[in-house]
Length: 483
Image 1 (cartoon, rainbow, N blue to C red):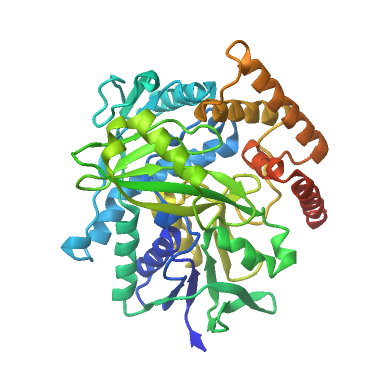
Image 2: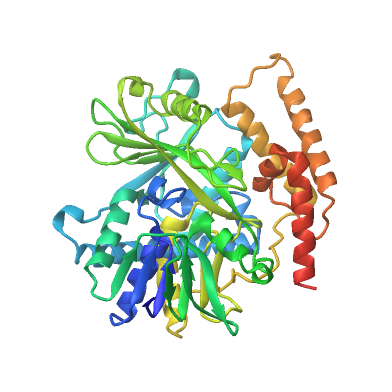
């Protein structure tokens, strides 16, 4: 049996950033980073890696104390990125050095619902209150954008302090740092179980039967974390459950230079906004869908392929119809039942969680990695631990508020998919149909204490016969755990 001081379970952005931060805290620590080499179902490898916190602001985010706390962590993370990349670049080859493509254009158009307008206004308000630099932009002169005539942007702003980088290059550089370290080891495998003795963690067991001993374990496995927690049911039911936000992204090779900055809409229709990112040369990244489910999505579907291509050619650049298809990418964002992250220690001594970050894991990785590293070393962290793993699910919504928000998202989905019904009054019919669906779903869930967030309604609606009893039973177990 191999023995280490710390096992970091997970080789995505959060796991690798944690290993990096621990090594910087104490270079003598023996650290094992465990994860399958191909990162199947992981979020990081398929991510666009937009480095922005204000571009992610929504009206719903800033309405609650917990949402504002999440935004505050994004602000902290944005300040750490320059020094974080500088430290990485100092230790890798010239070919592996990383650079941020600066600047992000945020635009609205008529291809979504009013929820996009509300988030755009919230974004502007947050920027004004923070003093962060931003400027109104000419929506018809965004470099690299050439949408169809009926999908022209209606407004736009430019965020010079935000931007993007290549996620695959980031993962490659961080992996190299682990490989170069004399006290860090990459282990190709999947953690399936925690080894526990007398109320403390003693190591992990892998899918192939190998065991690794360690007195500290960090679970940073994204959506894979839930299966490991389920092996300890008494602990698992005290931690908000993790679901999968499956997403598809696309790489194209344009014939001529195209986007020079990140371009994106606000978040909309139960998903991150439509976005396009330069990836060096004429290569471009576009994303992304967001389909919430219980099990990870491992392959993209023709429906997702068609939807993204249609959005890109219609809303960003119609001339990309003659570009070269490089490939499709599929990943799964870890989404907790209350949509808040799981950050910190647990009642099982030596076990730490770093997951549930939804769309923000890669962007937050320098902050969260350094925070957990300091906490493991017995030091004060970088922020107040407002999202400790063991907690009742945070209630962010009233039932009426959740239904109203979900209805706005469903309406936006209709616009995005160009649903065609009788021209006169079709939207009223569409709205009434989804309102009845949402009302009946929440009534059937019958939950007064814990309100299922709008984002997770799609899971219940997709398989009502199975998932409504699932959520009712889940919340009953939560009450038992905290009674």
